[in-house]
Image 1 (cartoon, one colour):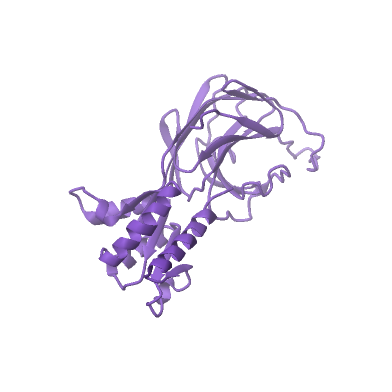
Image 2 (cartoon, rainbow, N blue to C red):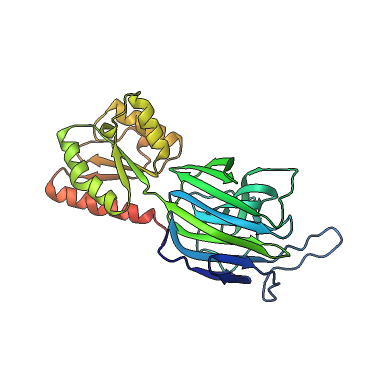
Length: 326
């Protein structure tokens, strides 16, 4: 959690008092959205958008919401990678377009689901899962909502009951809040238990690669806040393959050195690609060509010299910078 929780209103009207935020419905007259007309059209409720100073990527974020009407909405936004399809419903909010390119929204009354997930890009929304259909949310009682993010696995909880799960790759971004309703919606008790994201490194365990790992990969990734794990770090008595696949699923990033034709390396890399895990490939320039299956992936080629390690260190930093949201 940040040392001091700060919120800024980006759109709409809200009262921020202590640790509680109250959405106060107010129609914005400057909006460029045309108002629908006719007996079968729906006037959308006013909404408020806020952003915090809390950077989040991995861990658990939770809060409590109180509605004053069953249709009120409150959801948290976290940064994710990847583009949702263009078939969603756009709110065309000019205040946030382009500020966070991709986000995942989770919370109450999202995309017509009492408990819902949605992906969005520049406020074009697409449902990513829902639960509680056929029921209405209670009003004037506090409802606890939480999301547990571990690697690409995201579980949503309501009052400590898991209601939804999805797979998305998160990116570090400041937590944002979306509240909507014709009557006030209240938010309180935000808690962000932040964990270091895992970087799983796949490589052959020989002296040359051990040096690259200890001198370049581990210190660079550690400086970027990753908890670096390699296959020889496991100490459990179970199947090593189970430990590896579980760690790949929990990892935020996979780095693989594909210089030698090592069957274990390519098996683990293939598993990471199959579950759409972000990967960075490394290869010594002595390798003449990459296998066809991975030849289309961006690869950092390096010279196995002191100077060459300095170059791959710099390029690895550039790739890690690209994974961040400013």
